[in-house]
Length: 154
Image (cartoon, rainbow, N blue to C red):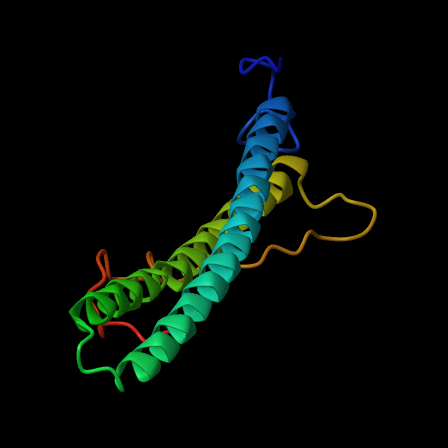
């Protein structure tokens, strides 16, 4: 475990090198975890979307057939269709979640790169480290809830 009180090299003022390296590692692990989360959300969203749209198509098919049968109560099927439409709308959180994850990943990587550059200094044999600026806005998604019709579907 790095010693946070290790001496700071005179040529690199600021964080001790081991502390900076440890902090950079933690930031990169968090960024990698967010990347895995993004892949999991993508997979879950694709699976749910496929099943919901498939179920929606089947319910619409049953409604078309049942329309010719006046003795059948269509209320239950219309209610099921409304519930399914609400579930599909709820999947819109995927787009917002992906935007937040990408924003946070970019911010974490920028911080990790800046820490590495500042701790290591400019004496790298490959030249100065290139650090991309972090996101300019604090939050790319301003919504914190979803209502039907408030977000464009997929």
